[in-house]
Each structure stands twice: as structure tokens, then as C-alpha cells.
Length: 252
Ligand SMILES: NC(=O)c1ccc[n+]([C@@H]2O[C@H](COP(=O)([O-])OP(=O)(O)OC[C@H]3O[C@@H](n4cnc5c(N)ncnc54)[C@H](OP(=O)(O)O)[C@@H]3O)[C@@H](O)[C@H]2O)c1
Image (cartoon, rainbow, N blue to C red; front, side):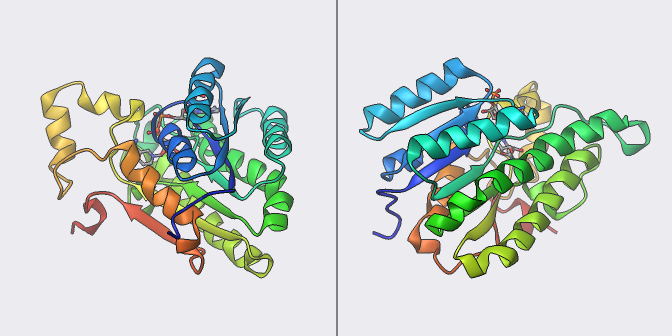
């Protein structure tokens, strides 16, 4: 019963595809009205249609999270349409290159930080008053790469590790106002982001050999824990990292 989100108003970023889309649909399934944010307006429109077919309200807020003004405007549009905000899911993010630190260009480092960290700070700050009014919660989608070294992906690992630290700091700053802030740390999930690891059987086998459950996770297997974090079932949980990785991070 406590996993019910009836009456909640949620904003999910990166909701046009993959994990964010699954979270938006799962939230609607659990009873929430949902604003969806990403760059691809056509795909967002399809998600809105699916949510409306479940009998919930939904709005597309197209924006590039790397454009601060557009991002803040999209956040304001979401809050206005929903009439407030109970849950912010900072999910938009990712990594588009692998390279050792010795060869990495600082422009690549900066872009990764802006996508996976700075944009989250900007959007969260802009909608924090609405979250304080509702005593709502923030869910930051980080990654298990935040927990240890990520050779050839130091830029991505460092951004996600900083996101976990930001989660803890904001949780401590906001607890007095009744706002909860948690991080969700997926392992390897079968989305567009990990397509490059399925280009050959060898590449895929190499990834799955390090996963005790020996398979890819699905977007829905991240979306359901995201429902938990947004729900009253997680009412006494803040500043935490919920790892959902098929056992990957438990490996020695
Ligand atoms: N898949 C995994 O194995 C895995 C593991 C750990 C953590 N994660 C994290 O989970 C989150 C979602 O990943 P995913 O696997 O679902 O990735 P994905 O399939 O590539 O989807 C990424 C989403 O983010 C949006 N997005 C990307 N750049 C954006 C930008 N500049 N402005 C606005 N929206 C943007 C994309 O929409 P548009 O292209 O329409 O803008 C899309 O909706 C990311 O933060 C990722 O780091 C994923």
C-alpha cells in the first residue's frame, strides 16, 4: 500500500528513452501525474500519450539540460502544469566516450560534468522551493561507477561520485524542511547507453562475466526501486545510495 503514488506530482528528466522513460511510466502506473523532460520532443510526446492512456495527467517539457536557461524554464513549466512538485528524478545523463586520463581532453571532462552533475544542481536548485512546499523528495540517478575506480571513464565515474556526495549534502541541508534526497545507483542496464557493449558476443560476455547475476538489468528493474524511493515506504530514508546492480558492487 505505501508504494502507492496517487496524487503525487513528479518531474522526470531523461524520460524520452531508457531508464527515465521507464520511471515516468512506472510513476504514472503507481498513480502520479508526470512531467517529462528531454531533448527529443517527439519521443516525449509518445511518453505523454502512454501516461494519459493510464488516466494520469502528463506534460512534455523539452529542453537540453546543458542549456541552463532552457532547463530552468522547463522546470518552471513542469511545476506550473502540475500545480506543485512532490518528486524530482534527476535521471538525464550518460557518457559518450572512453579514454585514459592521460589522453583525455578537458573539454570532454567538462561536458561530462555539465551533463551528469552541473545540470542536476541547476534544476534541483530551481525547483527546491516547490519541493520544500510539498515536503517532497529528490532522486538522483547516479551509477555503481561512483563507488570505485572506472578506468577509461574517470570523467563519468567522478561525475557520478560527486553526484552521490551532492545527494548527501543536500539531504543534510533539507531534512529540516521535510525534503528527502536519495541516489539510485544502477549497474549495467540494457538501454541505448550500453548498446556499444553489445556490439560483439565477446564484449557482452566480458561485461556480464563481472555481474554475479550474469545478465543485464532492465529499465523496469530500476524504475520500481525509483517508485519505492518516491513513496511513503521510504519516508525515513534520506541521504542514501540505493544500489541496484545484480550484485556487481559486492564483487571483490
Ligand atoms: N544504462 C546503464 O547501464 C546505466 C548504468 C548506471 C547509470 N545509468 C544512468 O542512468 C541514467 C539514464 O541512462 P539510460 O541508460 O536510460 O540512458 P539512455 O538510454 O541513453 O537515455 C538517456 C536519457 O537522457 C536524455 N538526455 C541525454 N542527454 C540529454 C541532454 N543534454 N538534455 C536533456 N536530456 C538528455 C535522453 O533524451 P534525449 O536524447 O531525448 O535528450 C534520454 O532520455 C543516466 O544518468 C545514466 O548515467 C545508466
